[in-house]
Length: 273
Ligand code: BT5
Image 1 (cartoon, rainbow, N blue to C red):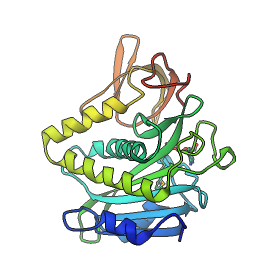
Image 2 (tube, protein in one colour):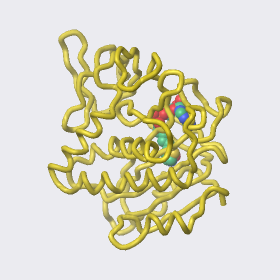
Image 3 (spheres, rainbow, N blue to C red):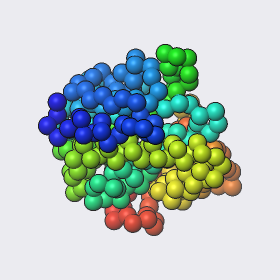
Image 4 (tube, rainbow, N blue to C red):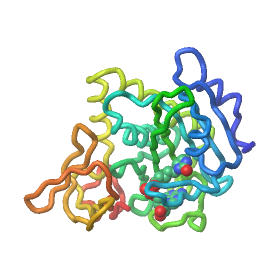
């Protein structure tokens, strides 16, 4: 057991009457917490791990989570009948708010759901991978996974645009981060599924925290050539609206790179990674 995780305390804080979580598991090592949650096939599960041997990013990419440095978490939620496209964005927003609650930094989001913190510009401290699955009882569920870089030093990180909370000058304990982020996922999930006003609240909170809006970006579609333009909106479905010259296009999935920051909200650096 990782020394900074007191599992009974975490369980006590997250489980109980009226909560959406049914079980909290801590694993010292796992292939991937998303894969573990899929095997368990139950809604209301929180699987957190110290390290992953086959952590996954989007589109089959690798996610690095070496022992003792990071937090890998997957939670399972009932798939809402409508607006499920917001769940990955909701997860990024919740992680950003959870970090802000316990660490001395104000994270922003790179659309769709990368969490960035100020560190020589803005760098990625967390990535989100949401997948759908079917529970053992036949219900549709979402596995919302996020990997948070906490203690890594530069040599632990696979790419230069990554950072950790420690490198960003905002250290925090893994137990506190686990509680704050999972609690924020629960809160936003309740808000989102409460009705149209709740969804609007989520949309507005997401847009306020989205650093991509208004920036020049390079957008790489899943298939096809990259486009360079301005990210002008996140629409009501959570899609990014890109303006290239006088043409607008709408994207539900893509990789986005921030090219320039003229007036970053609360930014201290020059480039958003
Ligand atoms: C993501 O993918 O950012 C989603 C990462 C989700 C990881 C969590 S951990 C818990 C759960 N269980 C899993 O197996 N996965 C989820 P993407 O946007 O495709 O970014 C992946 C790319 O980020 C890689 O190709 C690397 O370039 C880079 N990368 C890998 N590890 C990183 C790290 N620790 N920090 C920052 N960047 C990283």
